[in-house]
Structure formats: structure tokens, C-alpha cells
Length: 197
Image 1 (spheres, one colour):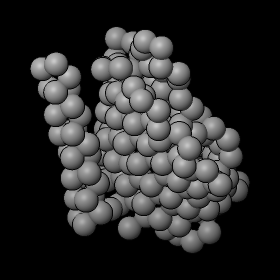
Image 2: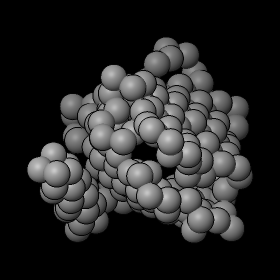
Image 3: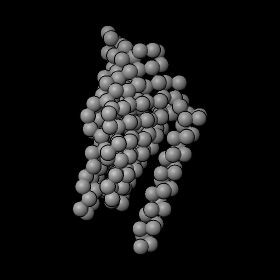
Image 4: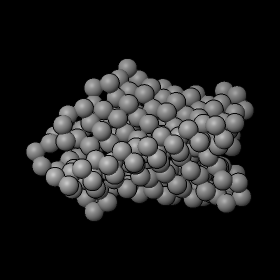
């Protein structure tokens, strides 16, 4: 009983910390705002680029109308991964993720590791292709969560100097312990925009 109360208290502190990071990012550090949606899901993410260090800090929220929510905060080391004319940007790091599914017992924490790649060909530099992958096996999952995985692919078009529109596909899934069903928090196509400040 005490362990359950302690876990709930820890969960609420984690959620409050993520919300606090998001609010700070909105007011002070909003270097990039990313919004994507489809008929069932909405994702909002803020990215703060730490000057001259190569670090990116991000916080985000994914809401699915039928399956629940995912909150995350992450850190990545970002740099160019190519030396040629075509730009290949890469980021490696990890996230702290909290999931809250709509069914009982579908909540938990995970620390997925992963990263992203973004390719922009010089010949058509308004177009870019990007993908990201994050995975937490059971050793990096806490509470009722057994593992977590997220994959995203997108094709972006640079409409304005500081704004992109994109079409993408996302798959986010949480696997849980006991007899709790696994949850696909999002799967399928989405449209979105990315604004840089």
C-alpha cells in the first residue's frame, strides 16, 4: 500500500516537472514549436537549442482521443553528420517518458534512448526527409510499463525561412506488465507544422 502511494506521488511529481519544463520552454526557450495532428491524435513539442553546445532540450505532449496521453522531456546532442554538399543533421540522446493510457493500469515511466536524422538535399533545399526512433526495453521501464517504442518519419517543405509544413507517419506504443493490454498511443499519418523563433 505504501509503495503504491509512493509511486503515485512520484508520478505526480514527474508530470508536474514535465509541465513546468513545457511552460518554461514556452515563455523563454521556444526556439522551435512543432504541432502535428490527425483525426485522432495531437502532438505538441517545444525544442530549446542551447547555443554553442550542440545540445537540444525538448518537452512534448501527445494526446490520442481514444488511447491516452504521453508526456516527454528529452536531451540530444545534435550536429551535422555529413561533410558534403547535402546536409545530414543527426541527434542522439534520450527521453524521460510518462504514459497514461485510458484503461486501468496503462500508466508508467520509461527512459527510451534513440535519436533522429534529417536530410536536406542541396539541389532542392526546401525539401527535407526526417526520421526518429526511440526504444526503452524492460530494463529502462518503470512501474507498470514493460517497454516503450516510438518511430516517426516525415517529409517537410520549407514554406517560409522559419516555418515548415510536413506530412508524416508516427507509431508510438507502450507495453505493460500483468494482464493489462498494450496501447498504441498513435499510429498512422499526420500533418504538421514546425515554427522556429
